[in-house]
View 1 (cartoon, rainbow, N blue to C red):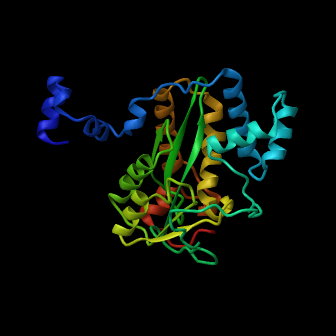
View 2 (cartoon, one colour):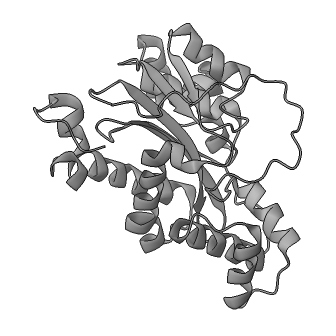
Length: 283
């Protein structure tokens, strides 16, 4: 924080600092500053949260099976509403769906570079993803960047939107200290946007993208979301954005520094990422 910024904060004269700068200083995305509970009725919100739980449990459920599961849970809903909500939440079944039509695209799709690639060191491969975050009276989204070798979460943030600028801000935070050789994403509009791609290209990072509908191409961050939801979010039912941010901050500190991984030879992600102990973790 610059001397002028500190003086403005001490004097309480925050009008001297732009909204963008104020958000940067406290590590908050601009969209989160304007967070308001999303205006959905309680039944729809309960349905969305139920879809999220079922998807986390069984990520290969498509629209028809998800519709059946929701009706068995007591929701009277058809497949059209389930399809609309799943699109809105940014989730899809992990299997590759038949390409009945190929929509026109204005962006380049990069090949998946990680088939049969041995990940042998930290900062070899990073990846990112965005996920739906349930709350009692609303919902938000979380973006995280993870190192594949160590499972270390390099950066994360929450927002009430899925816009590309939010994702780029998390990418910028991760790139402040290190640069990976390969960066893997899915084909979501946030990660194929010109601002996101140009940021990777400016750092001379090779870009890899999952096959459409193949969440297992990005398996490590999918496992992160599962751990986050089962070990924190579903246990606490956060009521507002402040409580959510505080809870997730504690969880990611636990995940990085105190959660042992059998696949990492019973070390923590931080131990593997920073110390690089002998012995290659099982991938």
